[in-house]
Image 1 (cartoon, rainbow, N blue to C red):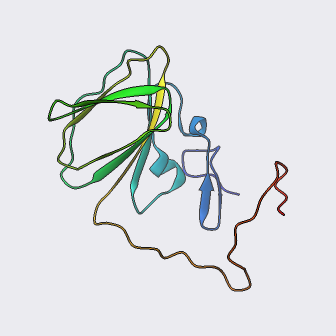
Image 2 (image 1 turned 90 degrees about the vertical axis):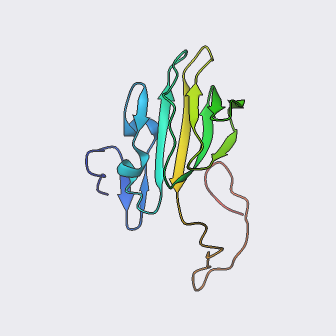
Image 3 (image 1 turned 180 degrees about the horizontal axis):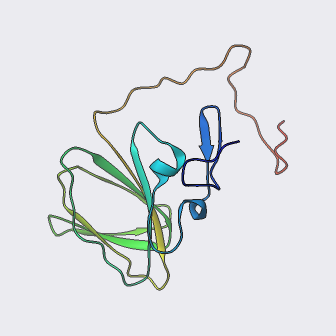
Length: 146
């Protein structure tokens, strides 16, 4: 399997790419998920934010963003002055024109993922390949299904 350009640890195949967060960079700051995995239909990055660090305020002309806190906790401040604490597992949607700023008020680093896009949802377009039965099945820790 070939690696994604500039990201030697990214594993790829026909129509897919897989990487661990650490495969996409090191230290604090942006992890370029879109570039590393070759995502073409939406923007996506991860940010590793050390304790006590605040990002600058920003907004977008067009893209709505979805934030997901993977590790730690962040405080998100919005242009209207509202502040929300986002803990691990929390999502936040922000309109393009809404000003937002992020602070890590925790004792350790925070890791969050941002997905951005415009022009909407394409609808439910999942299909079952020929010869496959659409079903949900249990899988044990070894990957064997039942």
